[in-house]
Every structure is written in structure tokens, then in C-alpha cells.
Length: 487
Image (cartoon, rainbow, N blue to C red; front, side, top):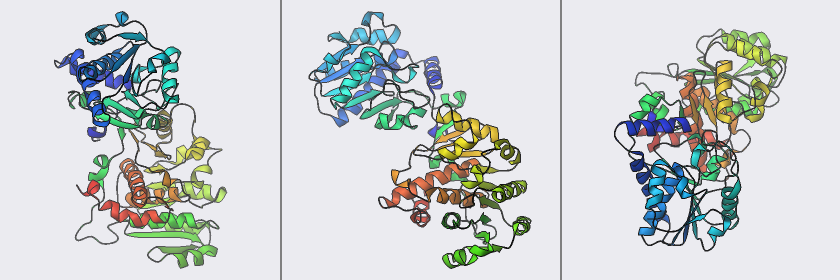
């Protein structure tokens, strides 16, 4: 995985600091650089004005004192308030607190009088309990007064590893250091952080090799080198053959998946449908082949054809014994498979049966409701999806505004490019088709899932307001030809 896109949890970021200090940097220097970086971002966005800097007792507070002193030196009217006494601060934080030349007040909403900007340097990502006391009251008052807030690292009260909020208020700008944390991408954290800037404070990227992170922000740098390429001497068969089980009477979902798989580059795409539904599918599709099924054994005969390189079942399939049996038959082939919608729900009463049947490459694409039917819904999103993938032995895409993709080996990716316009009927069916199209061409399941999710979001962003699911496959060629993919 490309470490450029790595996310670090709180422990790993502490390890990055430690490794940087071991190479000769001091904590004081790191703190000075961090505070300076925050000031640079503040001065890019605001002209000098009355600013209140809220400082906690630890290193986040030390960063805040650096900010306060530098803004003070630049002529800004600065007011500083602390949780606890400055004299009780230790280490580098105490050093920078002692350098501050202005008055320091106890934290309370009173320190906001006259403020036009607030810097939240209270706790950062290391807080492991709900925000309370004067810190909570002061931040709540700042939010109520609609004062612009700049958070250092993360808004205080936001859990750095999970994105869960316990007393945090929304910031306009969050400045973090070296690499983002999961909280900057997972909801509600992403919304509370506002604009997020990652500042370089001099920590070498080489420390990531020792830390070995396994969580990443979804980005083409992770998967674009693995995207299928067109061979000059290739043909439609070398580009793979995607097979989709088409449902009835719900026919639209599978048709969306088929168009998505074809647009993603599958050389051939076939939908196998009940005989009664054949006229509906055949009339609506041209480049997609439609194969009528006279009975359950017809699907089995199709599966004997090794030319089908990837399989999808679920969209519009219906929740019943027939769907369950077809899923098990498809999984028995050992070929790359995508399970979506009804193909997931049909195992709600016997999730272990599904786990045991997954023996080959497989991607599950549940939304939150479908996920809860098969997997433990407790805990934070990142942990839940990792645990689910490990249990069932498949790549799991838990869809949402902060989609998480996890592999059985523990790798996980958080997606952040999905616009709210994707909340429209059928968009999930298109996503499963995107995954299918990549699997059909031989792409590894985890990277195929990551690529499909990012391309799905990029296609929606390309269209803008008024998006419906039918638009997404048609926008894919534009996205695949963009600089983000080709560069």
C-alpha cells in the first residue's frame, strides 16, 4: 500500500513523534514547528483580529501557546485561557507556555468576550473521555456565538481513532500534522473538522516503514497501478466476462449493475434472468447479453462455463430460498464474486453458513442495515468492518458517506470523496457493478473495491446536482480519463 495515503491512529502518531525525536529532533522543535504551521494557516484566511487561544495542560496546549506568541508578535490582540494552572504544565508544553509574554486566564466562557476567532488547543486527539467542565462550556459558548474556530490536531472532544464525538463542536479549520487520523474522515468527525490541513512539521516519511500502518485514505495512489490495462493484441475475451444474476420483478437494479460492469471495462457482460423477465431485460439492453433461465438448473449449467471470470448476485434477486441456493452455488465455483443487497440479507438467520461458503475471492457491499443483519453492529465503524471482513473471509465495503473498505488481513481504507448526491436509489447497484467489472478483468478484490468506491464518488462529483443512478456509468469514462488517474 502507498504510505503517502496512510492514516495514523493516536498511538501510531505518538510513535512517529518518538521516532522523529530519536533521529535528533526535540519535542520543543516539533511543537514550535506545529504552532508555526497553525499560524500560517490562520494568517492565510483571516486578517488580524481579536483571538482567544484555549490551551489544555498537555502538548496540544503547548502548540496553542506557540500560536498565541506568534500571533501576538505579529500584532494580533491575543487572549489566552488554560485548563488548570500554567505552572502545572510539564516538558516542552511548559517551556512554550513560559515563553508567552501575555496574561493567562482560567478557562471559562468569559474569555470569549470580544473574541472574533477562537483557537482550540485544549486536548487534541489523545482525549479518551468525554469533554466536560470549563472546556466543554467554553467551546459550547463559542459555537453558540458562531465564532470561527481553528482546531489543532482535532476538535477537542473528538476521538482521534474513531471519529466519535463527546462534547466536540464544529471547527471551521483543523490543522493536523504529518498524516491524518481516522477521525478526520469518519463521521461525525469529518463534519466537525471543517477544512482539514495536514502540515509538514519535519517528521520523515521513512518512519512510516517502521510503524507499518494498515489504515489509509482512499486515493488513486493506492490502486491506480493495479487498474486493468488494455492490451494492443487483446480482445473482448481477454478483458473478462462478467455474469450477473438478474432478478424479477425488480429488474432495474441488475440492469444498472450490468451497465456499470461494462463501462468499467469488462469485455463481455451477461445477465442471466428468469424466462418471464427476458423481454424486459432484452428490450432495455443492447451491448449487454441477456440469457434466459428456464429453471434453477440452468444457472448451474452457466456456472460450468469457465469463460465467466467474475460473478454478481443480489440486486433485485429477492429474499428467499432460491436466492440463498444460488449464492451458495456461485460461491462454490471459487471465482471472484460480488454479493450485494438480497444476496446478503438472505443469510440474516444463518450468517455462519455464508462465512463457510466463502472460499474464493469475494466482495460484500452492504449498507448499514444489511451489515447489521450479518455482523456485530457494536463499536466504531472502522473496527466493525475490520472484524466483519476477518470473520467472513471476504472484502467488506460498508457503504455510506464515510464508506469503509476492509480486507480479511486487516487492511482498511476510508473513502472521503463521496458527495451527498449519491444518496439516490440504485447508486449501490452501480457500485457493485463497478466492482464486478474490475474483478472480471482480474483485479485483486481489495484494490478493486477501493478503486470502485473512489471512482463511484468521482463520477457523482463530476455530474453534480440532479444525479440519478443511471448517470453514473456514463460518467465513468470521463473520470477514468482524468488527470487523477492518468498522471
